[in-house]
Length: 95
Image (cartoon, rainbow, N blue to C red):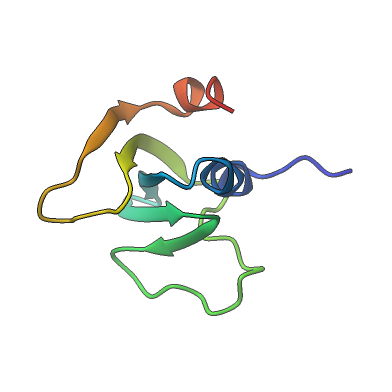
């Protein structure tokens, strides 16, 4: 079995923890993007989201700057943070 990519691991985490929303800040080729993952689905908050779910939202070349764990339901005007600014290494410990 092939190892799961980082985005697949994060999506799996949100399936197992449906009470959480993940907000991921990434950098790819000097551009910053934010991804939101909820119940196994990823979408970009800053650029169009690919319609094909087989096209990964996060390339393996992208640098994960931080991951925020937010209580669901997500309210952009008043997010309820569980943890902020986790690194990829810190997040992996939660899997």
